[in-house]
Image (tube, rainbow, N blue to C red; front, side, top):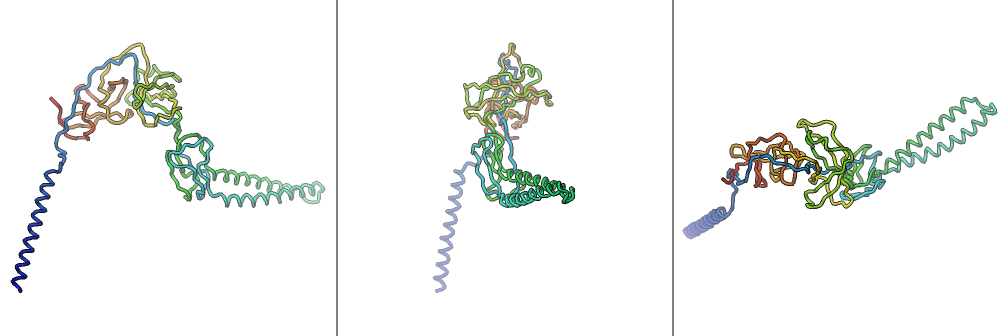
Length: 351
């Protein structure tokens, strides 16, 4: 019997060993088929050096659209939210009711005060008549009048608090954030919703010092939108900065009507001006741009690695962006392959 057990045990162990060997074999085969990206393998990119470019008589300035108005609406009263009439993405007209707070206690206080005022008015009429007949001292009638005035002031205060329990939209717009839920208990000043007005948008551009005199308030300018190629919008200059930044750029805002509702905050736009002269300036291809036009960046190849570098942009056209500072003529700027890059990633270029 013992010999049979030993034989069966040896067979079982051998069988388990075969299974384990097969599993390891399968694992090695699968591992061979899986692609493992080598982070140290250089990424193939295309790069050029900045050069001089002539910007023609129509000068363009890159910018980003911002909402005309955006505000976080807070509660004027305090209490529990018993009605919440909006969700994120809803459009609301000026004066539309956003939320309603529980006002039961305030209403009871007001009712009680009105009863008190009614009695004080009766006392005032009676004491005034008695005072005229010298039946009571005049000072007692005067105290009654002062008490009635104090109650009237308290009534106005309660009425204002009651109005504060109804939160209304100060302007027409879209609910872009809902910061509370039905049943939440909030205090005075607590943020409830964020309203964004996109009936018109502000295109904010940075204009070099040499070009700022080309702009004037209420000046009409052409505006093109990256996502609507070939379509031209008209804007009006609504703000011209009075102080330049450290790179001698001035902020200019162009107000663009959004009656069709096709523009969105955060979109890229370009404002264009027609001028009688052209300029030649140090520039890079627009396709090299990484990030927003407010904080433009490019990848520069340094010691075989792609380094993300910020620079100050100026005039632009459809293909080139002027470099005011931040880059040199000897820099190698990546113009193709940025999508696969990260900061300090190893790169190689076609010879």
